[in-house]
Image 1 (tube, rainbow, N blue to C red):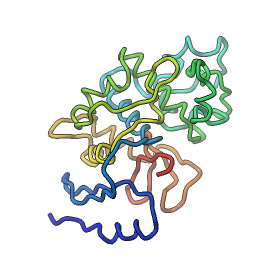
Image 2 (image 1 turned 135 degrees about the horizontal axis):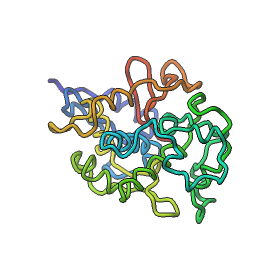
Image 3 (image 1 turned 45 degrees about the vertical axis):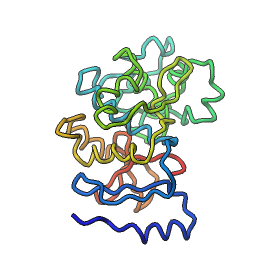
Length: 264
């Protein structure tokens, strides 16, 4: 296998002043090319965090902690309003992972989180009006992956990082990833994880290998294929970035998919 030449790309990055922090290209499971303009350091993945949470959901499903067809209130009844709406009653975990909960507005962005310190975020989310029938309208929203992360932590009786340590981070050789927390001390599964480019690239390689790593099946092939396939149409996008969303991955034309955080 020949190495991939990134010199032309590096020249464009320098000439255009692009803020590219690093590039890793894998071929047949091996590192074929690397571009690293400055020493590696951990940086905020922002919503790239969601793809790790989606993977945690896949592992939790195969371990029997819950199913995507469970109703949200099967697990969050005590956090919900005393008289939940019919639409909230019909919301399933599947709608959380596909960003189709039906809420009227996005929640738990960085500005809102700063204003909600001291507030129970789970109760705050479940008190919001469900405007659309769950499963019918895509709306990018931190609430879904946040609730899924909280659910894993409650069912497993440990933090999201602790849950993933032996199941994902340890096998991938990612040591002590950094998470943000909600006011109750739960790891925030929607944003804020800090990793290096090399560490982040391992998640992509795991998915390209259909969930296998060094001979072990860390997450099922069925989950990988579902997560990286269109689950709902987003209504926005273009012919390059695509118009669909999977399980915490953006789905692109030609079989491509991506983990994506704000600022790239």
